[in-house]
Amino acid sequence: MGKAGLCLSSHIHPIKVMCAGRVDPPMLLSAFEKGAEGVVVIGCKDKECRYGPGPEQGQKLAERMKGLMHVLGLEDERFSTMAYASHEKDRLFAEMNAFAEKIAQIKKSPLAR
Image 1: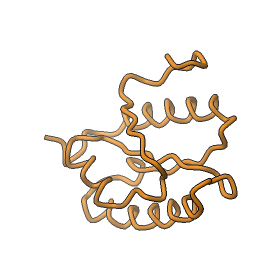
Image 2 (image 1 turned 90 degrees about the vertical axis):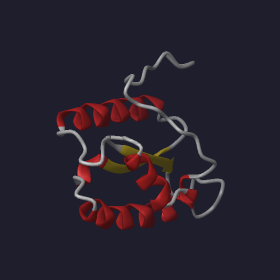
Image 3 (image 1 turned 180 degrees about the vertical axis):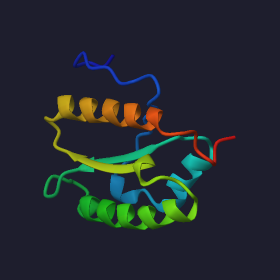
Image 4 (image 1 turned 60 degrees about the vertical axis):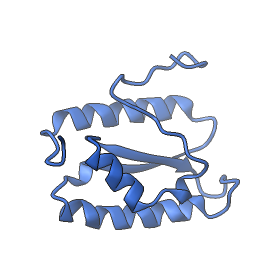
C-alpha cells in the first residue's frame, strides 16, 4: 500500500526509470525473456514531461514493440504504454490493476521458462 492508500496487484513489479522516453525495445524484450507475462511503460502526458521528448519517444517505442511482439509470437495485449498527469494516481492504479487482470487471463507466455 502506498502513501495515498492505493494498492497494486501483487503480480505487478514496478521498475523506476528516469524517463519513459529512455526505455528501448531491448530493455522490454529482456523483461519478457526473464519471464514477464506483460510489460507496461508509464510516462508523462504530452506537455507535462520535464525531460522534453519523453511522450513522443514513448509513442515511437509502442510502434516498434507492436511489430516485435508478433515476431516473438506474443499477443499485443502483453505490452502497453500509458500516460498520466501527476494528479491521476487513482486512474493509474485502477488501470495498472486492470492490466494485471487482463494478463492473468492470457495463456502462459511462450517465452516463459
